Length: 603
Image 1 (tube, helix red, strand yellow):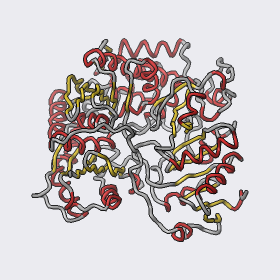
Image 2: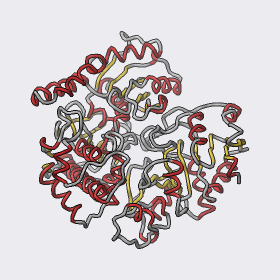
Image 3: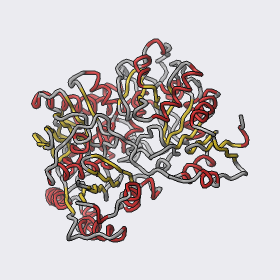
Image 4: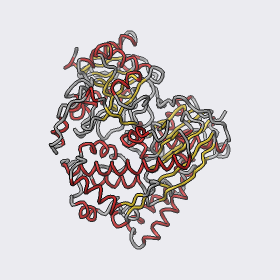
């Protein structure tokens, strides 16, 4: 028996994971406990939670594995600064103290943190280091249902690699080809994220959501695409690319791009965060997404050509671009595509541990038919403790006698267009809420998108919502979806549920408010939806609720969005859940079998 800890930290989305005999038994992001969005610190609280959840101590651990190789990354930084000198001086002076005080001596830092957690014996338990892209590759292949697969990893940058192509067979992963820094699809996409006024490494999904508001037929959109392809980036047939250094500043500067050069090239100003979104911003988001899809599809086709595999494992931060994933899936280049739900850096903690298990300890790999994403803490509290959360000034609480009564009651609330926060079992791992830390609503409500965005989530009105649908009913509503349990593929709503739209307007809010679908709130302006399929096997409680809602509405589908407000991580504990409930206009909160209702909206 081998038990291994994986750690990702010190960049963004720090996380810890524990595997036992090749199966992930716990994983969590530090942000959920620290309440700091995208927390980059050592995952001290997350690791403590994983150990507690699995009833393990550090003395039980066979190895601790870090998700990249700091010395290789440091080598890349030094070489970069050397080649661009004397440019990059301010960036160099800013980054070097961090490296010398923290990142360069990561092994000692890890040992120090582990000793604070418990009885860690560094002589008995080795601390290992995996290459960044191998950690990503292992995180998807060794959690996949495939014994053999092509593996495509695409992100910003690891040590040197920004994209890599590998093949997995049994317990071995062999890298066949790499694209190296500074050429990077991930950094190109993040550069547009920055230019459009969103935060790098967390706002990319906002740009993806904004893209469908762009007008593909406008002269401006086509000009943007042409300028990107002729001036910013050279795209080769195998998906490799070259970026024009005249327009980018991430090599040695303090920002992603050289803003004046971009403004001159595209003829528009960089958007300031929180400022109004205009048609030009939508068109640019469309152009950036279009280019991303083109490059990723070229990479996938090349991957197919040189591996001749029928299966593809996709990983890295770019693999969270569910629109591109949906386009790739629809092309049927590969028979099967698997994406692990925490495809970004947090999930690399799983990959680092898996890589050590299979390649350092030489353990066999058994494909996993269904990867379980519910890997965080479960709060085994007595009903009395949950009831004690209630503040009688704001809400009342009651215990549901059994789970069948609970789901029927909540299904009625949802059918009556109440917004329900749903907190059950173990927390999900990864950026998506998959039915255990979710805010749920009726997809038939015509104004529910606006209600959720402005009154509950307190975020940009243009942001779409995802449907959670009974797995067996997904083909009724969507064109290509069979199984999508992790909400990582965008699909098209079937024409039977769509209404004809007026497309002449360039006003984003006019387009947002046009009646476009029977399921208005889960249908984006281009007729797409980011689908989560729910089976009884994967999440029996959520499945039961969807079934009861179907019995009332005729549709086994709900809006499912993450249980948080803008700028905060998804809730972790019952206390987090109750705090979010009373500070928003959520109507009802369910924590296990306890129902909290606001006084003003009692049924």
